[in-house]
Length: 297
Image 1 (cartoon, rainbow, N blue to C red):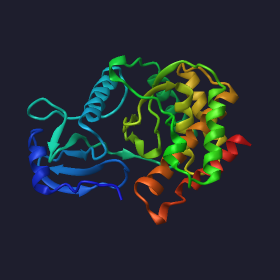
Image 2 (image 1 turned 180 degrees about the horizontal axis):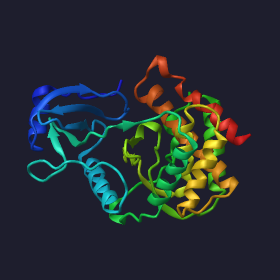
Image 3 (image 1 turned 30 degrees about the vertical axis):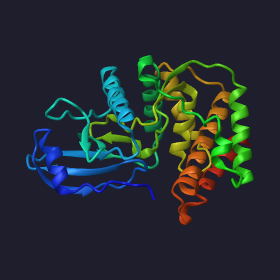
């Protein structure tokens, strides 16, 4: 298992107090594979989310705060990190970085309507118009160059073959415009508030890469381990184009979906088989095979 932090009430009280509030109750939140989040109810009736960035270094946590501030300044709808009494956005909890943000109440539907999917496409188009500062040093959302070595000699042939094919297909596209992408728009990284506003969450996979790859990651994420949903895909692309995004060709989109699926498949294998072996999830990566087959065929 990953090494997650259990947030004690005493520690949470100090953290919350530094934002100008008093803690009343804590509730561990479900979800998330990289960090530990806890809902804190305060005596003044407000609620905040305390997240221990377990899988972050201090440098990467600082970069995440800087990116979030940058996105908000650029008009992207995402919740801010609250500042502590010393005006910083990171708290040191026994050597681990912590952030606090307002709790957003809203819906996180697993299956989107066509209208919602269109809104997601429009949100991506808006994001892709934002030009990040080169000083942010954002990575690309790609397989590592040494992915074969990281998988090891015992990796399943099916997985290696699919990864190799997706990499070759992506390379054949040639150069496309590099944009700011989210890279992980699964249903739990979006909140639809009661006023109809779509908020995008969790920017830890944000990177500088081809915008069409973001469409691919989003389509995979919203398909929910099922074959590609063509109606959903059409709605996302329609919303993207209507909001000013460049409509990808059918082949570009298919290759992007295939490659995005394989990036996710690779990370599932690395996480559940190599980094944190879990007998109950050693074949979790296989759940994405129906999607990639539906795109390729």
